[in-house]
Image (tube, rainbow, N blue to C red):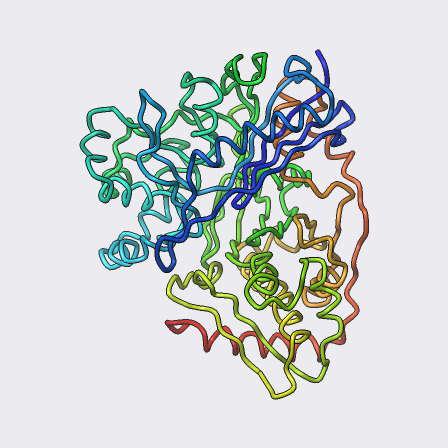
Length: 498
């Protein structure tokens, strides 16, 4: 069997497919953006058909890029934007509504209602999550309540539901497999991560029929085979993980205490806690990092909603840069005597604040503030938020969270300026790997190792390679001044006190 593995990386703004060879090097790729829909303030939707057609197109493009046939591919691994949900017709496969995206805030009132009923502790104890619109469960509930006939059809067994991985697998297998993996299930507000099972009481509270939901498998497992008509041959789907868990795997963070942070549209820091299910006291999330051979590895996660999105705002909103790569150069030219802070709560604030109603704000403007200061404030906002996450992790897990190095990936880490700033503010080294496609690589490793054509965990971890380490060089007094200003800016932005 060949060592070629195909990774499908279905993200928030684009779909990608990457072919890796037997040396785990990317040898072919395809990428396609798709439209974002904003039907109301705070609402974000995708057309599931756009996602589907983009995935098929990018898989074909990646195969063409390498000159390979589908029969040359040993296995497919899938990684996906998490928490985004779809409900579709069991017979026709047609979605009943647009997908509701993880960024969407339309269920904020429902979350507050459930909190008012004293139910957040119940949800958190079992799922490791908080009652926030971010997660899938209240999105399912909204669709069932607001799409004409959806609840009745669901109760009659006519509909199926899932996160994007589930929808893609159902389509890829020609409707033969309605499945997900433990990492995606752990983000739904409906899955007991201690028992590794859908929770009937939580399903009842949110009014989600159990029959709607997929079977939950390990992250490396048999998820079905692709329909021959799609690509010309059947390809086994052998690995699935939510994007942040896939990045954790791709960064080879297999030992308890290892930490990675991904800087894409949002920022997500994940700390491996091994077989210890750490219940956060600092409003972090407890989640499943991966489940292999029935053994669950847990993690603490901090989720920041706006990271790369702040750079997109500089480019598309303020139009102060032409490309994302310009942001670091512009920030470097900022006046060092100005302390300008951007709190990028464009869609609320995530961990550790979880304020769905907060909105973005800028502090410290002077008559001399210009594009360079805006650029620096945008990039620093990501760095400051990362520092907040790491401080919360150390409080939650003091025995294992004295992480000395942070492994980073995602589009923003190409910016040397941002990574140096990150090391300075964290007062810790930041390691950038040679392979930046760690999310796709993690999905590919799950599939390749399951297929028996790629190495196991230890050998995979040994192949992790460093591109550059950024070490802190900022004066402690400067760091503390900046952090004090950041905390004051956040305090003024929150809609409720901390």
